[in-house]
Length: 320
Image (cartoon, rainbow, N blue to C red):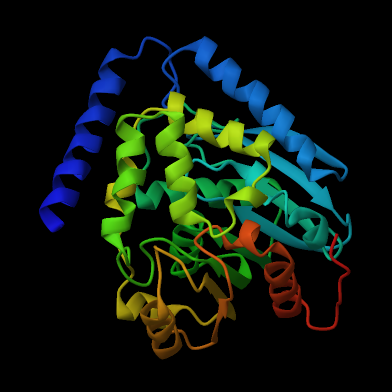
């Protein structure tokens, strides 16, 4: 199985390089302007699922334009949301109404993935990713923020927390990918890897069933946007550079951290939680019943309750 993964990973890397050489449209993610516009239209339609007031802002950084969606209480504690791979900030639609009742939300589209952020430099290193988010935090004067990261976003949240100087208070990691341990069930991941190489709707639907225990809960509008991200975006070779954090890096994090995984997750398992319990000084771990890697959609009510209780135990919410 390791050989299969290596071959698929190598193909992904080569495909990503080839796409970069052939691309005429000056954008790291999309190959043509027309493909990007189709995707952006689907993004705008899916963003209506938030069903709460929000504003969209584009801010200029050293590495390009970063798109931020802002919502929630104007005087609430600042909360930054980092989405999963290719999911964009729209992915928070089952959670945003509950989170906005207690916090001021800043949902950031990752600059190297499909979304409304635009990378104008070379692909970023881990060090540059840290610098990028610090620029964003400085722009909004964010201090002592709460931070939620899902999947790859969880890896980035952990990366930010391992820095000597950061602006983070509490952290929530929703099945963080390649963070506590390598992907748990690699054999089941093969269709998802192949989707990046040969995207079509059949592979996409199969991939959803791998990551979600309740794919029927995924809004068709959001599903369309997520599919187009996989169809049109260049193969994302940067995922191959993510590695689990060392014991010393995890021990360095003294922030309160809540880690949630689904009991049917293909990315993490109880071993992930055991490592977190051992190494995170102020870590809390919980397993969400009847949920997969997409636990924030599979069991949004339970996940929302766990997050709000952790971020502000004195607050209670009535879930939509």
